[in-house]
Image 1 (cartoon, rainbow, N blue to C red):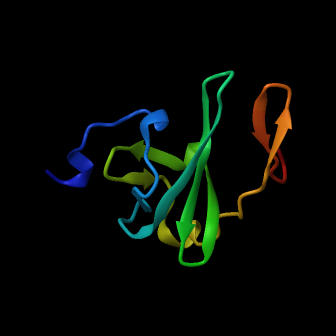
Image 2: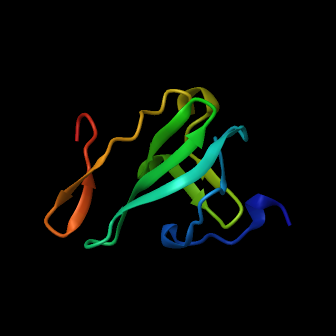
Length: 102
């Protein structure tokens, strides 16, 4: 079974270390951490480990999640420009991240 043939899973079941591929098929990293707003059950994005360090992938840039692969909506060149993740800030009972322009 090819990775693209895997069944989609919830972001909540996505394990660390799953390969992350750009839409052009290039592997751009591996899942480090899933970010969500637990109180509102909203997928916020993922932090990935790349050859250049950790990068943040916003939820709209994630096209598909399976147990064996995450596929992005952006190509490898765009993935190389992903921002650094920022530290979460505790607000009330939920964790929220701070990103420029948010």
